[in-house]
Amino acid sequence: MFEIKARDGLARIGILETAHGRISTPTILPVINPHFMPVHPNEMLEMGAQALITNSYIIYNDEKLRNRALKEGLHSLLNFNRPIMTDSGSFQMYMYGIEIDPIKIVKFQRDIGSDIGTILDIFSEESEYEEVKKEVAETLKRARESVKEKGKMLLACTVQGGVYEDLRRYCAKQLAKLRADVYPIGGVVPLMENQKFADIAEIIIASKKELPPSKPVHLFGAGHPVVFPMAVLLGCDLFDSASYIKYAKDERLIFPDKTLRLNEMDELPCCCPVCSKYNVDDLKEMDEEEKTRNIALHNLWQTLAEMKRIRQAIKHGTLWELAEQRAACHPSLQEAMEVIAGEKKWLEKWENISKKRAFIYTGRFSMHRPIAYRLRKRVMERYIPFFDKSVIFAEMEKPYSSKNEWMKKLEANCIIETPFGAIPLELDEIYPVAQSVFPLETDEESRKMAARMCSRFYRKLKIVSLNEIGRKSEDYDIRKIKSIANYQFGKGAGDALFDGKIGIRKSKTTGKIRNVYCNGKHVVSMRASDGFFTLKAEGGRRLHRFFSYPKMRVVVGDEAEPFIKEGRNVFAKFVVDACREIRPYDEVLIVSKEDELLAVGQCLMNRDEMLDFERGVAVKTREVCN
Image (cartoon, rainbow, N blue to C red; front, top):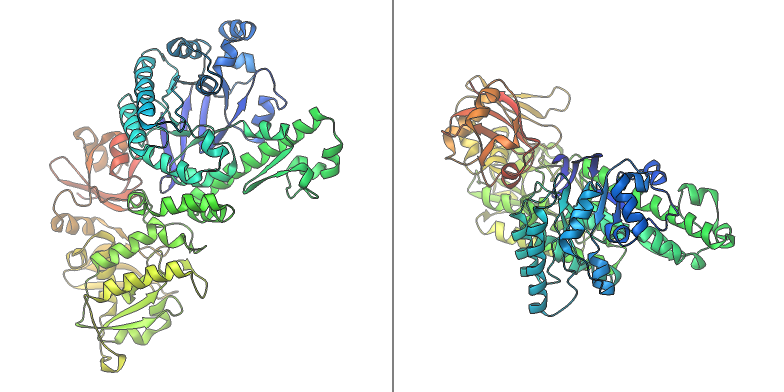
């Protein structure tokens, strides 16, 4: 069972339950070879590893190890009482032409007590399309047969299909029907070795589009931390690494952005226990066994540290910045970011409505982030002008309205040309407009993107000069709350929410809007963190009357209604339908199957996730609508 605890778009911190404990994702599973363990599994546990992966074929092919594993169990064999995943030998079969019985190896993994077993898929290399198509068909056949034999063991069914997007999607779609426990994405090792990161990004995207969102995804064979931020950004939860020991044998040291050979180094730019204790000369003078062990330890520290960095970035909402920074270190990663930039429409569906930290511009890929795409799209589609005339202003100090009070009185739509594009003055405090940091000048591609958006936006406005505009407008606050409501909830929401006598309460400290009342009833509150509204019960009633089903709705089953009416949260397993436009952390209307408004709240998932997850909170209920 898998549950989301925190998220940054497709990237999620989750909990995967196994027979030997929980695994917090995203995480790395170090590869253990029972014949050669320079770093003991329990040392890895002390370093922060949560689980291991070992090759069941290696154990099966060694009579002594096989008999011991069957008699004492896998965990006793490795002297490790935490989760262990087993691979089936697919890569060995691909590399060395070894014959392995696909069902027998799954049964063996089950019988030795593997927490997560893996099917024997067909490793698809860069072959001709028809050949890969046949291999996918065989992988699917084996998966269907293997599911019947898994018992209580979690089973990983691997997505194959080579570099062919349609075959990857087909394989993932068919495997999704089996409701396996984990979905590895296989066949990427040659791509990793040749640094074809754009191909890897395309493969992940194709697979993720068809895989069930409630299941963890394992990127098989991607063990170098340079690829972790990009892969997690696209929704990968699990990784395995033999690189730590493989590179150590070749005297190569792993870092988050590169790999360095020991004989090329004069300093150890690292503060791990190994690099804090020894210098380069110390390592060079060690015998081979000691040297290999210490470099392997360094490589593990770096690998585990990058995963910790990623988990923290997810909690802060800064994973995009981290991925962009890592991409700047390698041209092939920049090619991968180009691929990701082309998928912003799909990625927007999973993107948080706002983040805990500011939007930090790092370069040309920043303006392709789904949250920037959403901003441009919603301004274009949802902004309703209040005046016949509009005035354009160049970028200025933020927040624009509080730094330029005189603009509020202009009898015109005030439009600011920002790095994001054209932004109406009334939207100057929403995320990410106010909560963003840019250099004085952005890159040429970003400037052109902003200019194109401005050009399209201005087509529906009558642009005039400032000296043609009067300065007697007194209703700026009303325009502001209506514009934010339209942007956040949908076109027309502003008039629906604020139809009546408006009362606005502001912060005594900042002067910013905090609560809005209509005809004496509390309708919404404005969040200081992102400039968006939280719905009150009365606001929910007004939007429920205005928007037709299923707009803004999360529909719960009959069995959940009594609990929702008591103010309980909505769990995903009780959601029977939801609006397709809902995004993570949106304000939503919780309704019955008959569209009776039960409560308002903040969702933690989009529609696809709500309908697929069996565990976890889908909506945090804020107020009951009795």
